[in-house]
Amino acid sequence: MLQQELLSRTSLETQKLDLMTEVSELKLKLVGMEKEQREQEEKQRKAESVLNVISELQEQMCRLQLDIHRQIQERLLLSRDHPEEMAAGDGVAEPQPSSQDCARWEGSPELLQELRHLKIKVEELENERNQYEWKLKATKAEVAQLQEQVALKDAEI
Image (cartoon, rainbow, N blue to C red):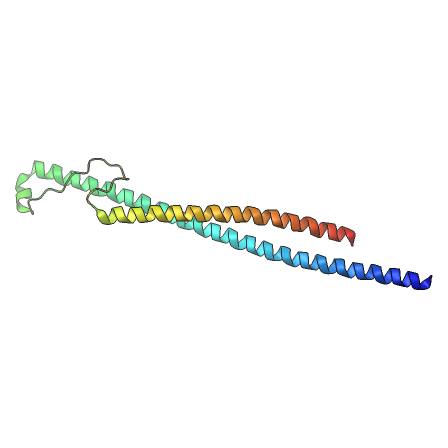
């Protein structure tokens, strides 16, 4: 009988140690997942920051385009009011933009190319952000599951 109690107690101690080991492993995995989640959130913040910078650059390009358009209009008005000054210049009037729409960059292939490049970059960053959001949701679900497992193991112990 004493031997059975001793075996039973040894078995229970072994089970306890096994459960404690499993809880420790789950806690380590949870810490790793939380670290990965923080890294994903940091990448998301960086991607959003880049998107904000791109947006600001696009707004700045728009303001520059409108300013250029305004200056062209002023020069055209000046040349109409003072044709003698126009004769003293290079004699070539700059073309008037057809609208003030910032999406139109007529006469500037470099700006058009840069705008296309920025649009592609924005799309890439948005796709990357969507991937990070998906990974973040999956990670959060896995972290919640691990927390449940840890709580169950703690309850068993």
